[in-house]
Image (tube, rainbow, N blue to C red; front, side):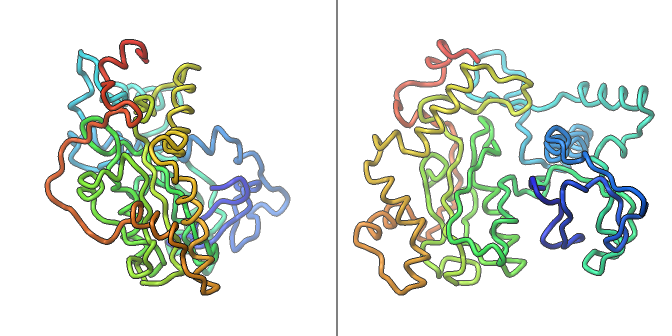
Length: 354
């Protein structure tokens, strides 16, 4: 979903329709009701609700004691009911909350579990040759949070050949590193595996232990600087800058389920994000802006046969993954403040009790 269109590049749909008319049921591209079309499905609240809808996975996880439908946005039982302050700001939905939601929908709206587990959209792709046999015959589509396939970072639409991108910034806030729910690179790895299977150009991404053991979730790292370290060994692959939510000036692993975010929290988030992206406004590396610029233009230089400058090569030596994997058993991802490593969470939380 974008502000302009609804659809997918491949899979069961392989097509797009204008988001403005997404409420119109079509068959072979023609409105089923020839006298009227439907607008209004492009409301921000409905789109955000659809894209974040994962009730199906949350319910299955609770019913199976977290053994089925593992969802990347879920946190661990270990930190859910701690009485002492925890570095983890995230929590999952208790079974009682999910059951009460199910009961309310059944009682007041007469909807069953299947009805409330998905967002229902009129199918604009029915009867199209590009649709799968199942999609062709459906009157409605059941839509869920796309990260249920393990790719929380929405890169799939960016890496299609038609886009021709040479540089991508991938921001990871999946919270998939237990027990404190920072990050471990799993979602970027899943995109690489999916791209490789589909024959798309994308950097090779190592397994999660390498991210943790080489500290890639606490500092910037580029993937794909060397074309040999891409899925198709081609300079058509974009270079990907991986940035993960991490504590630089604040512990910002807040719960994505909280209904409100205070001004103080937003200020901490913005300041921490600024410090992460700029490496403390150059405090951690005064050359970081140059290194970022080098990565942005690198593919363009290669296309015109221009060699990297010595300064850019020095940057790449420091920030590019060199293909080495370190898949030993990693320690717990318990990150300190990058700009003040001696200022631990418990001390920080005394003046930031969010």
